[in-house]
Image 1 (spheres, rainbow, N blue to C red):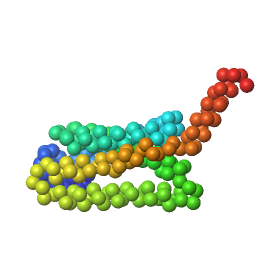
Image 2 (cartoon, helix red, strand yellow):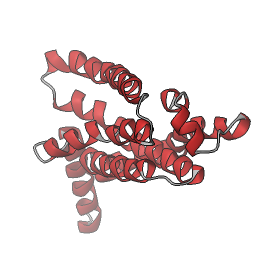
Image 3 (spheres, rainbow, N blue to C red):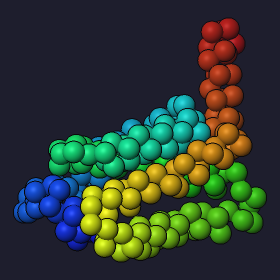
Length: 186
């Protein structure tokens, strides 16, 4: 967000927000994450890691479209909040799936690589914004915003090959057997 705010084109398009309003633009994504945080773990346990991840990927993509087409600062802020909320639906189940699906000797390496990819994304976002700063129109900030959906689109393309967590499946089997015992009276 700092990169976009440094662009004169973004500043002019949204009326040069300052003070608390500029703080709201920055905080919206984190606020969205915090709001859904108490629910994401419960949803992952109840419905599985895959469906939560899928809903997060779709949410980030939709919110990115809204953000990239924003015509008002309010639309931009709300879309950032939705990106934050949907992003939490991606960030919470992903390392769990990695750890639960990876071969035991690879778990630590793959989980660490997941968290390292955040920085790769941040670097790519910064360089993209730097590269578009000389565009004389609103595409200078819209292009980096659109590219925010890049990684979720790649994940979505390969999502269908992703199995459900064996721990979640074992939990479902266990809870189903408990429910059946309760109904049967055994």
